[in-house]
Length: 355
Image 1 (cartoon, helix red, strand yellow):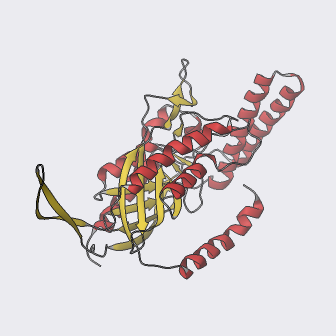
Image 2 (cartoon, helix red, strand yellow):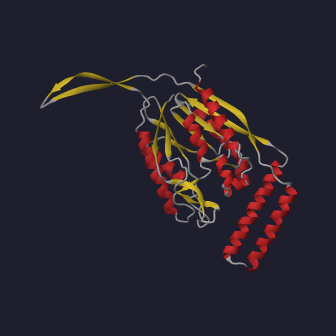
Image 3 (cartoon, one colour):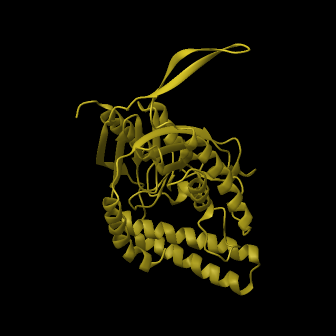
């Protein structure tokens, strides 16, 4: 991520808010869900027991496509939210182009098929990957995005934002008796709209002193330098991985050494029977499953990657398995439980009917 992008981000956000205020209009909304199988659990266990990034077809995964559609008062789509959990890592080191990966294609397809603007929300994808990924083949991300985009469009088109009540008006006598109906529209009740924000205290793992970890990282960088001089490509890649991961651990120690917890923002939005929750970082899919299962709302959209902040949020049981996400997370095994309980409490608070 470039420094220029980060420096320009506040102005971009302010510009988006200004444009939104200039184009305010009354809308109705509805939600529905479907199913799409472009993702898979990525924590693959090798025969030697090591957990690596691959395709774990028996691992937990959420393949739910969650949709919210906003219409103007004439039932013309204004915006569609597509919520799905999958790392946008279809394109990898072989690709020499900047791409929006599959979410960009999803947005394009939905805007073409449904109309209005499409917004993509990334779900709990910390341990979820595309079923085909890490490739330089541009057709792969376009195909996966089209599959998800068409499923999202089908769901969105089927949403009714205006309630209709069936009324029998008579019988038409023809070759057979045909019942005649009229569908009467009724104005929906104004949904309860509520926003909450609170800070969770996430427990951190304990780090060795930064100087110790930096020395280890420096030793591994020297090892990488030697491998580049006389090692094979495979040896160079392995040495580079060890040096990179050691550098990440040293950086985490510089940030968190001596600390036992960190503030982690949780935000929630209620729109009638719909709840949207967001946290920073990369939560595992099991965290989402616990939250959705315990939610009092008909539609619960839980997202990571929000409001800055980095770090994987594994579920407690995966710490014994190890693997990339567990080795690089700054959090202790209890952090996932704290997130689940904090989210469930917020959902209960959002569900209260008092204004």
